[in-house]
Image (cartoon, rainbow, N blue to C red; front, side, top):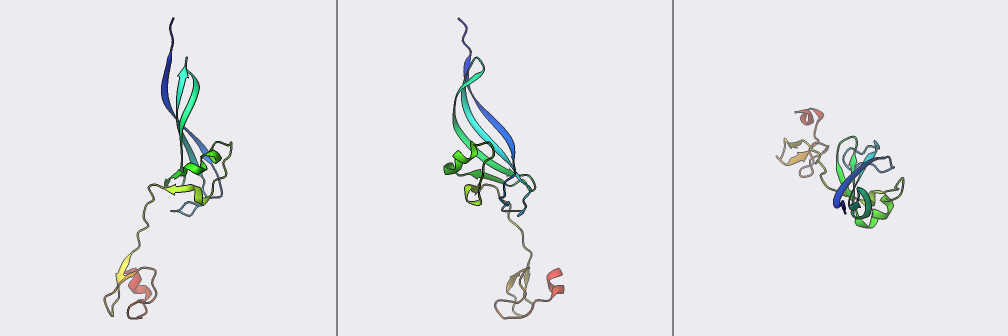
Length: 130
């Protein structure tokens, strides 16, 4: 008798357009829902599945999020309704801000400051562009 069985892992991907904005690009471009699981197969037919793991990838900027374990039941539906609180950021790129120096006191400023927090000097637009 010849018996074919084995254990494999499977990765499936589907489009997910929920009303959750991306943490990085703040866009509503949608996500790609990636599900990964292991399964036991007998004669190439899956018999038993276990070890589910879900994640999301932003279509616009490529940021990657894992879905918290308590929200896995939401992902097993046809169109899961995920919220901001279901996501756990994994590789979120840091937004770089240009830092500049106050001309009056030398304090290091962020590019979005209008006044120096140390001495109160107004930061002009031409200083920001330098």
